[in-house]
Image (spheres, rainbow, N blue to C red):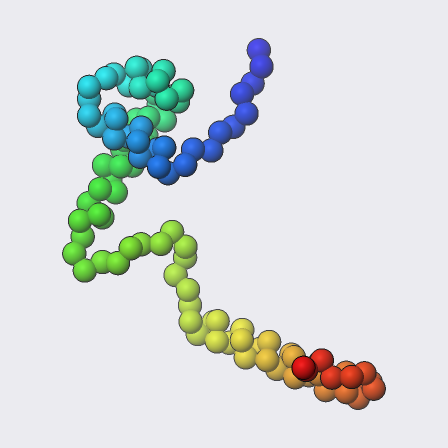
Length: 103
């Protein structure tokens, strides 16, 4: 028996399948056959949709990004570190007799 390659479904496809499952006009088995997805996966996507639906209607919230929150102070520290490193390397190039890297 040949094994099927792992598929990655887009969020839009998952939402479409989950919304179809919420309509309850067809059974999960029928939806699984239509969309070629396992019934357990449809049930999981439906539960995720129901859990996240309240976030759509929250007041005063901005669009949530899936990226981790950025720590500004650590970014400023990294910028400072890179500036010091660049200055050091520029001086080292000057002492070695190479032309400056600045343009």
